[in-house]
Length: 491
Image (tube, rainbow, N blue to C red; front, side, top):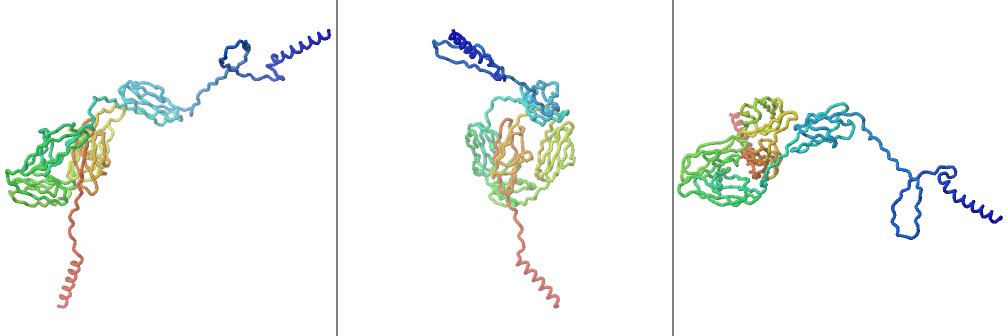
C-alpha cells in the first residue's frame, strides 16, 4: 500500500514538473519575457517514416514601419515665372510637371533655401531646353525666358568632305581661268566645292597661247592647275619691268579683271597704250598709262604712299542708329544700309541700336583704302521666337599658321580657324601676321557646308632706308667750316 502511494506521489510530482515550462513560459522569476519574432523558412526534407511534430502555437510580433514627413529646407518659398516662346510646351521643375503653355508664364513655387532647382521645357518639334538657375528669394518672383529652337530636319546631303577643289596658278599670273567653258576668274584662284569628277580647264591671257588641260578632282583633295603660257608668235611684244616700294603690290593691266601678279614683275604686252594699276593693303592705289613698243623693254619704278582712311558700309534694319566710338554717325537708310567715308584706319567700336531690339556692339578693324562691310543683325527684346536660319562655315588655313583672322572685319581668332556660324552668301576674309603683307579675299559660304580656304601670305618688304651721312664726311665738313672762319678772321 505504501509503495502504491509513493508511486502515485512520484507520478504527480513528475506531472507538475512537466507543467512548469508551459505555465511559466511567459513569466520567469516574476519578469515578463520579451516578445520575439520567429521567421519560419521553408525546408526541404527527405521523406521519412518517422512522424513530424508541428508546433501548434508560435508567438510572433509584426515589424513596426515608421513613416515620417520629409523635412522642409528653410520653410520659405519663392517663385519662378517661366516664359516660353511656343504654345503647348511642358514645363517641369525637378522632374515635376508645373504646367503647359498657355498660360504664359507658368508659375512654379520652390523652396528658397533648397537645392538648386532644374527647369526643363519641352515641346514637340523643338529641342528640349534645360537650365539650373539659383532659387528665388523668399516671397519673390524670378523671370525665366525659355526660348525653344525648332528641330530642323533636312534631306540627306553629300558631306562637304566628299567635295574637292582646284587651285589655279598661271605663269605669268593673271590668266583667265575657264572650267567646262565657264569663266571662273583670274589666276591665282581657288575653285571650291567640286564633286569628284574630271574638269576641262582652260587658261587664256592676252599675248599668250591658250592652254587646255583636263584636271581630275578627288574627294577631300585640292587639285592643282599650273599652266605655263607661251608668248604668242603672231605679234611682236614689249616688256615692262615693274617694281614698287614696298614690294609685293598686286599688278593689274587694263582693268582690275586682268591680274598679272605681284611686284617685282616683268609684264609682256602687245604694242600700244596700257593702264598699269598697283594695289597694296595699307597703301593708296597707284595708276598710270604706259606706251609699249614692240621689241623694247622699259622700267616702271613706283613708290606707294601709305593710306590713312577707309570707308564703311553698314547693313542693318532701316531706321536703326549707328554709333562709332560712342558718337552718333547716322541712321540706316530705307535700303537697309549706311556708308561712312574717310574713316581712320584701325580698330573702332561700332554700335547699332533700334527701339524694341537688343543693341549690336562689336569691335571692327577698318582697313585703309578699302570699303569695309559690316552686317549688324538685330534681335528683338523679350521671349519672341527668333527666326531660325541655317548657316555654313569656313575652314581657314594659312602659311605661316597663327595669323589673325578677320571675317567681315570682325576678329575671329588665329589660323587654322574653323567657323560654323556664317550665313550663306559673300563674306570678306582678311589675315594679318607680323612681318607679312595683309591678305584679303572674298569667299562664298553655302548653307550646311564648310568651305576650305588655303592662304599663302607674302613676307612684308622693308622700305629702302635713306642712307645717312657718314661720320667721316661730317668731320671733314666741320673742319672745312672752321678753317674758312679762321682765314676770314686773319684777313
